[in-house]
Image 1 (cartoon, rainbow, N blue to C red):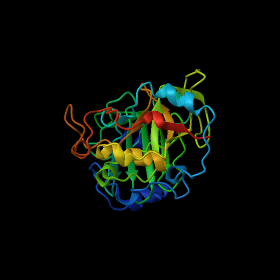
Image 2 (tube, helix red, strand yellow):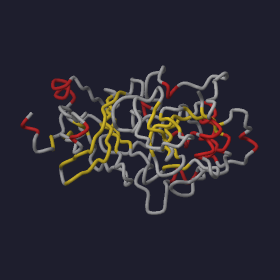
Image 3 (tube, rainbow, N blue to C red):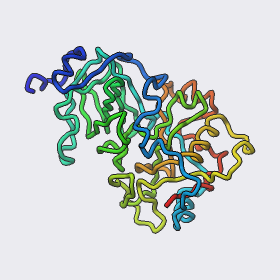
Image 4 (tube, rainbow, N blue to C red):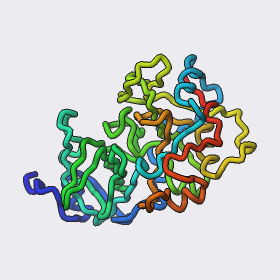
Length: 317
């Protein structure tokens, strides 16, 4: 594919892409942030762990109390809204495609090798150290997930990434420390607007073990403490809590309900004891989190949602 070596490939129609890699991309906006998740409002197969409610007889890990105490010195589940918010873009019929090399050659073959990677005009990775960007070809179900994406003029690179499917399990690749899809478990803007999050959440912690458990495929954790939490562990807010009695802000209530019904998977390392991924709402001005999020009571990036008694979390076995 020497003709692609310069980096940028002119936008091309669905049939041309299909002829190269049997990739079909039909419809959708080519350059806009997803204010509504469209046909992938609930990504991944119905059997995906991300879409399964926690059964009433779920067993609790015998070390749950100490593990939760380690990540709850004070009640907090930090909302990654802006710097580490996940920019999710829709790729449409005429979206420009690129050859995107990986700069971390020590990780193995670049997942984007051979792919015409769709990146909408105006797309920007988040400003956190992960430099995350997610581009979704809705009709074909292909998800391009970037870790430390960077643009230089008309050229894109990424440290590493993953190619996943909207119709898969939500696990696979190296876009996250545990092997979870970078789209999986992200609280979407539309879900906060609706007040309902119908899936498990993507959690991060500074006390993640180097070990992992299913459904995780690996771990980037480094904590050797006895109370560390394996990546892939599922955390649940005590389902017996009466959330209606806590005077929660709308955003807090939506997240707490999801953590009671679906829980969250620890899937990456963070600098905070415990955090959760949100879709970044557009490109908010400095000091702002986005209109939908502020309307739901989120005050700032990393909002701790401290009105929820997060010390009532438990780690499932």
